[in-house]
Every structure is written in C-alpha cells, then in structure tokens.
Image (cartoon, rainbow, N blue to C red; front, side):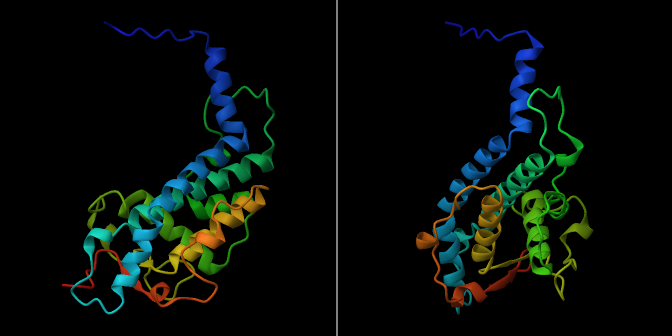
Length: 219
C-alpha cells in the first residue's frame, strides 16, 4: 500500500503559512517555549554535574556532562525570543508579501540580535550571549572546530580573560534570568518557575564551579 499525500499547488497557500511563521511574534515565542521545556529536562543532571565537580578529583561523572546541550538549547530559545522582540518592534503588516527571512532577523548573532531587539545588556550579559552562541554553533555539536584556531581560548567582551569556551555552574541561573527577561519584555509569563529552578536566592557552591571546554580538569 502506497500512501499518497496531496498538497496544494497554489503558492499563495504556502506563502500564507510562511508569512505567519515569520511576521507573528507568537510563532517565535512558541518555538522558544518548546526549547525551554526541552532544556529543563536536562536541568537536574546539569546541576548534579556541577555538584559532583566540587572536590571530585578524578571521579567526576563524565556521563553527566549535559551542559553543552543545555546551553545550546538555551541559545536557540534566546535567539527565538530576541527575534520575536524584533518582529514585534518592526510590526510587519499581516498581509505582507514575504517569501524569505527579512534581513532584520537573518542572523544567529545573539549580541547583534539583542541590540536590534532593544534589549539592554551588561558586559556580563554580552559575555553570556557570546558563550551561548559558541555552544549552539560549535561546542555542543561537534568534537572539533573547522580549523585549529577555533579550539584555542578566545578573549571576549565582558571578560578579563579568554572565556569563550568556559562553562559555569552559575550559567543555570544566568540563563534563567536572560530568558525570563525576554519573556517579560514580550508580555509572556516567565517560562521558568522560580519554585522549581533547582537553586535558592543564595548563591550556591556548585554555581561557583568554572571549567574550560577542551581542557580536561580531571584525569
């Protein structure tokens, strides 16, 4: 038995679907919300990894290293929320004849998108966005960059040292603050419940753990 699917041949049909996906902030918000939900599935093992890193020596549970994918999902969610803010700011007309991604959002540069979205960020926020982008493009997806220079530590805005390939326990809290700030700017209730976030108001010991991707801190 062969399954035959009939699709409309009228380009206007597909154009309307494409246009709605682009010009409606809700479309980007919905994707961001799904990404956050997926990210939260990894929250417990991500936190357990940093807890285990405290005084672990050579016993650090490598199988719990989910931080890269965690930050990658966070980066994708942030990108969608920033693009929702830009779309809302531009206010595209509902009947706009559009058949490609507008230049205003045709980017994966989180720092640039934040600027276009009108989101004011500190140097520390810029550093976080640049590291999130690093994990979404490379560190969480491939074992090595496309060239040797890409694996070396790099100095980035908002940091006194080369921290592009760093990951921190405090990233869990910082990512929550970033995403909830974007959700709030869009008039959407925060997606991350502070009562089940995995940390308290007081900065915890595991949040002080700092490691560098590509440099093994254990045997």
